[in-house]
Image (cartoon, rainbow, N blue to C red; front, side):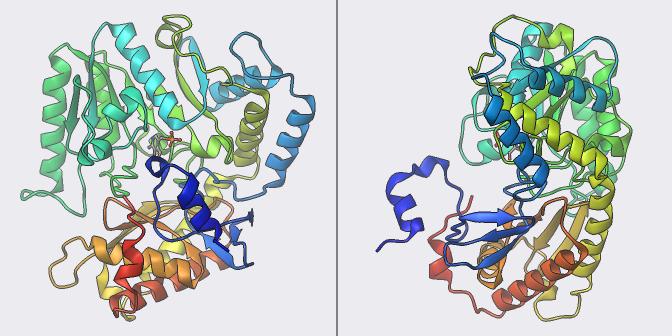
Length: 435
Ligand SMILES: Cc1ncc(COP(=O)(O)O)c(C=O)c1O
């Protein structure tokens, strides 16, 4: 009899797969995933952060159950519902900003960014979008065309896009990270002054591009330039926002108030839900230009409200800061153990942690080792993926316990040691292409 994984291979489209090992799951609870044969796996990805409250959180279960029982139908397109209006009100209360603002509700980070980008082009009657190399903003439309990760993978860039280098403190240019920042800001200034820039879309921490934490103040300086030239900044908080970095919003770290903020992933607690929050003058026009029939539906918006409420009342941002410190410390404590010389860098904020795997002799990125390590971690009982070629992206649920954080470091340490010692079968790993 074929396995679930083999049945999937026979029926589901390859274009929507990003696979690292043959992960099969039938259920989850908290930070644990359960496989069909009853194996329990520690979830260190949280479905790329979408399951940020963990699996089966009671607040989400309650919200879904209530909403499904009373659900009047589809979305907020042509009718209003207390949960869609309520979610927009909740978001406006939680996202700083001035003046009259609106909330777009969508299904995924991709459409929230796409809509925000298109609205900026329309509002300013300018087309060029400034973005960053190796950034990721979505898998559709303009959001895809301005995503450096897609461009790296051979997808045509949006014809009206410009990609700037994202300063990487671990891999600075020849003149050092300070100079990289200066060069990037100079480039940004030149484009912003040219008068053709519709908006600047920024990840506060580069995620799929390699979990790169920019130098302190970088986001603020970019935003100052945007403001000086009257160009809206879209801060893409889809993966890093809502508690994960140890603050409610990642942009808070730099004291920035972006014109537009986009959300997704954890906002829906695993269900499809996203949002863009920004000025009415940008998000109100042109009317009926971003229509998804089931956007703002009563079930997803009920969950969104429950997620926001849980993050705030359970103080999950503070908790992420504390557990993240413990997890980073536990990973650093691997120093000196077998294979630890292959760890080039451990970085992050809160529960957004990147662990860079390198060739110990040269310090060069080691993508082969990263593929082997995530495979071995799965064999040893943890789910973690890599980004940017060679960086483990460690983004567990925000409810991760201290004991789970310590266990996570143990499993990752063992996986790195085993992979470094050549115990992982390359042929097996090669079946799962990854990025
Ligand atoms: C920063 C960022 N923006 C946008 C997206 C797109 O979100 P979605 O896959 O939910 O469409 C992602 C997804 O990984 C992301 O990491």
